Length: 226
Image (cartoon, rainbow, N blue to C red; front, top):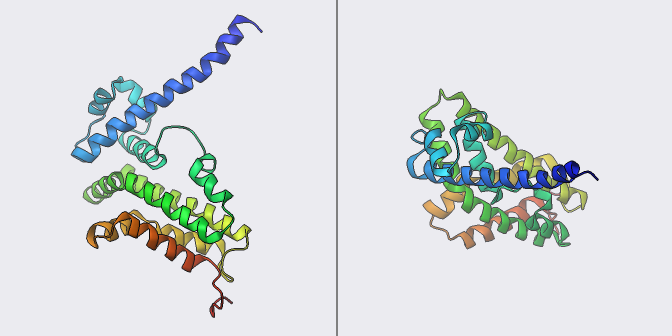
């Protein structure tokens, strides 16, 4: 192996690590500013300064401008980090897949969803408020639509998994099961129950697990199973 080839092999992981660290710094700075000041009052130049990167670097990381920046914030907040790691490879998902009991699977899923909702709630609320205040901002409106479409698509994973195991109640197609998961795990429902109704996050998590099991799983003696 030539010295040049060695340099290429070892420099690629370093570049990826640097890019990942830059994405994390940008997302952290932008998220903190947007939550504190609002979406509209957060400028790209301000984010670049807080993240310690050049404005051009910011635009290179978020080529779609501020909506793209907001999506980066949302995605990294949702995942909990900036690693380019498939959801199926993350420990929480692996634990759900490895669990044999469908009820326990949904208990683990509810715990994971509650953790994610706690992280994503402030960002999601800022973006909703900005979209409501600026209905003509097509980029922002499209961002929220994309987020909801991704949430619905992501809900198909657990639905298809339960279907493959034969755990979904009879007569419930995976697509309809995914739609119920999508609605039950919405940020708005989490906000209403924990903020308006005053539930603790533990109470929400327990409720979510029970609702998912009741809606999705075959129940002994269920009369509407056909």
